[in-house]
Amino acid sequence: MENWARKFIILGVGQAVSILTSSILQMAIVWYLTQRTGSATVVTMSTLVAYLPRAVLGMFTGAFIDRFDRKKILILSDLGIALAGLALAAVALWTEIPIWLIFLMLCIRSIGTAFHSPTLNAVIPTIVPKAQLARCAGVSQGFESVSMLLSPALAAVLFNLWDLSAIIFLDVGGALIAVTIVAFLHIPKNKVSENHAALHILRDTREGIEILRREPDMMTILIISSLYAFIYFPIGSMYPLMTMTYFGGSVADSSAVEIAFSGGTLVGALILGAVGNKIHKIRAIAASIGIYGFCVLFAGLLPPGGLKLFILLSGIMGLTIPFFYGLRTAIFQSRISEEFLGRVLSLSYSVSLFAAPLGLLLGGIFSETAGVNICFAVCGALSICLSLSMTIVPSIKNSSI
Image (cartoon, rainbow, N blue to C red; front, side):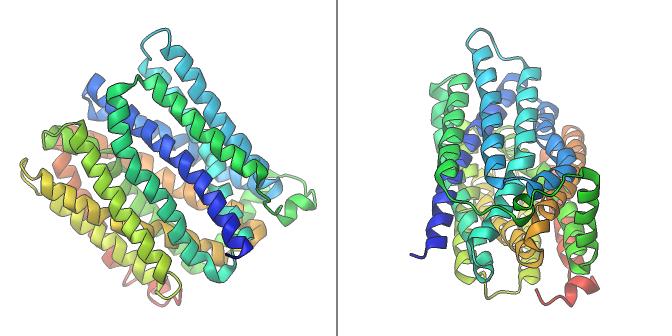
């Protein structure tokens, strides 16, 4: 195994452990809020709180990512997330956790993620050869998929055996494992941080925007990502509600849906890892959006007794995810210069996440009034329309990516 591949896998394993424990905690929080309140609005607001700070800060975190040691940023952001969890767990030892405190913890985790996620994706091109980025995007999605595949079953078991505070401690342990691996792994410093260039947040942010504007197809991909986020995130937050309220399922049924989705994502990641360097990335992204939309539309039209079919559709939905998020990241990594990559990645995530809270808010209100199944059907139809629009946009249609 080549040295770059060994480093990439070690880094990926550490992140996979952290993703696993974070996913267990995230599902436990959703189930906790669902059982305690039974409100789609509360569940949706928890997801909104988990994404909005990341969306706002993401406009500016790229300046730090490109100016300072990315290894230290990875470590400090993970430690901040762990400390927030420890504080919440300490409160839980004395009293029932207030809903507002859960929201505060989710907010702090979101702040940490605003630094961590784009930093991690900016680090990968310094380790992986450019020609291997699309395949490694599939491998990264595979690591994440394995974690997501295991987490629903583990979350269901632990949620019935442990208090929420114990699950929080588990997540803290996962974060510490990731921090330890990063601490002992050699990660090349970005050129700007080595030159000790001065930090000017607004100027550096404008530079990232200008880099995106110079690439017409990059801006179009950013717009498509934002529109897709507006559709995708409400659906992602409502899987437990769809399973447990519309289909009348249990926590175990909700776990089965999550396992099916994660299993499909793993299959998609394996396929992407095998063929990622051979496919037309833009067409693959358009197809993934269309297939996802068809499955969501079909799920929304199912009768209340269609839980088993919903589980099958969830697996197909999951299969499409690596072909959108993995390929989108690989496109940015291969097209954007390394010294600007942190800014461009954080900006791209931030713009998408600005659309996500609006979709979450409207989706929560719509599902409360019209029904969660109708929300699925409408979002599915919008996804299909978005996929079809990609075939007629000139900068996308004529792209050679």
